[in-house]
Image 1: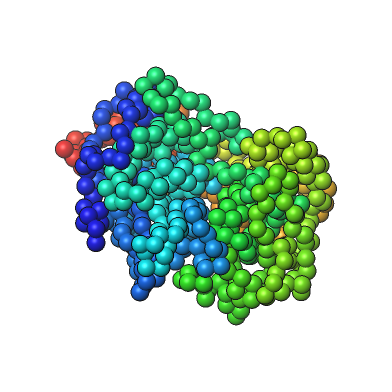
Image 2: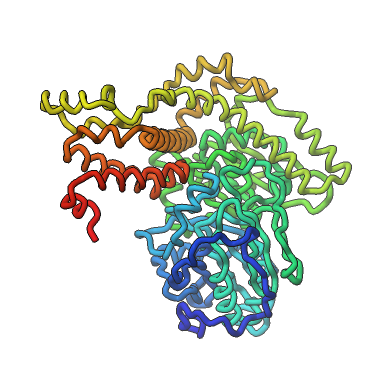
Amino acid sequence: MDALSRAGPRRSRGGLCAPTPEPGPAVASPPSGRAAPAPTPPWARFSAWLECVCVVTFDLELGQALELVYPSDFRLTDKEKSSICYLSFPDSHSGCLGDTQFSFRIRHSGGPRSPWHADDGHYSSGAPVSLQREPAHYFGYVYFRQVKDSSMKRGYFQKSLVLVSRLPFVRLFQALLSLVAPEYFDKLAPCLEAVCNEIDQWPAPTPGRTLNLPVMGVVIQVHIPARVDQPETSPPKQCSQENLLPAPVVLTSVHELDLFRCLQPVLTQVQTLWELMLLGEPLVILAPSPSVSSEMVLALTSCLRPLKFCCDYRPYFTIHDSEFKEFTTRTQAPPNVVLGVTNPFFIKTLQHWPHILRIGEPKMSGDLPKQVKLKKPSRLKTLDTKPGLYTAYTAYLHRDKALLKRLLKGMQKKRPVDMQSALLRRHLLELTQSFIFPLEHYMTSLMPLQKSITPWKVGGQGGALAGEVHARGADWRSSLETPPQIRPFRQDDFLRSLEHAGPQLTCILKGDWLGLYRRFFKSPHFDGWYRQRHKEMAQKLEALHLEAICQANIEAWIKDKSEVEVVDLVLKLREKLVRAQDHQLPVKEETLQRTQLYIQMVIGSLPKDLQAVLCPP
């Protein structure tokens, strides 16, 4: 193993590839007046962005081999190592020469192993649901180089630099690889160690903040999206640059690809593909290269934003993947997964899948590439499959012909590609929002009225309740009310509501919206959306209940209560306070402070011996 692998998690800052400028404040806004945080554990900042960095090379005897992992003490299972090795190289059918970038996604095996950043809960509560850290999968961002080299036994230099992360920041990590990989291929281990040490100095990815990320003499400026951001947020505002020389490289997004370029071959079918994504249908994408495959998969799965894509997806998948048998078995229905592949062998192996998208070689001219057409699955040939969307699926909604006309007109007028992408993204966003809005509207109607959220059960404000409780032998714990329940979601009631509050209010597209909703109810995306919304509403109810308790006259309530009831109140309030803080409930800071004061006040009303038990020194 080389010097870098032996180095372990070193903290040295020397030996950088290029001098890094003084970046000034890493975060746009000034620091808060809070006390300085405690020293972070080794690689805590690094692990807020990346799990590890891998180098994969080609060995004549072993084939693809993992040359090193950094930090060297990061543990990967044998299955993960094998997956990373095979997925970091294009297969032999791609014929990729030169430099190629693509990405993959693998299932991680075993329990949690990485030193997750201490503020992970804060990130999860503030980030959009579609940009959450993946709890059960790793993303691999690959920079592969294959060039002729007479000094190598095979006549080629073949090596991949791979960034492994749980964050779906494809745009950021591709930009980072573009800076680091060419330098690494020239200078190898010392350069990579220096880069990892620089990343270990980055601030944590905080939703809603604009960050300056210095690496190899360059400062990358990014905005981390927040859940409260509007989906069509404009590019990030540049923060103060008076100390940033040279000027930073500003990325307009950490995660969005060039949607128009990625979807060019399928623009005429983009609405049908949107429906397939919405319904979580199994889809195979056969592309000429891993870069085209991974970009198409990521572009299609992003079409549902702000809805989270709840199915499995693999931007690049090979026959060597550990899930190959699971995905190709014919003994059960195809799983809800989007597979990006490059090996034509999959056409035969996955012939039983209901939807197969074949994409041809990308066109380099300024004209719109030849569009894929809908074709019957029976026309699928295992040896020479022509480009097309092979499916028996019939779209529920009519095609928006005006969209394609606007995009074609934009190409004729040489409209910038980023504007074309913005136009396409806005169309898909409005389509998704029109579909989701009636569901959100109906779900909101299931929320209990705020006036029904009370701190005490009926009669709990006076002393009469306590007397009744003891007289009847009832449970004294019942005097503190629990939040009311959210009413159940009834599909028939929702479908009836569409007549007056359906998607026709915000979308001009005609079609069988009712049929689309009925099929959506059976998809993983309805289950994922409902669970997320129900969780958010339940947390809102807990927050409103805590506020109701803080607005009550607790001092008057405890006057005629037994010590047992008062102690129980303290424990219940503490439990609610801890839950509000640990689960990042939408509670005002003032409410949390007031709850703490109430707890102290109630404890102060108890005898000294009980105070000592509840507040030990």
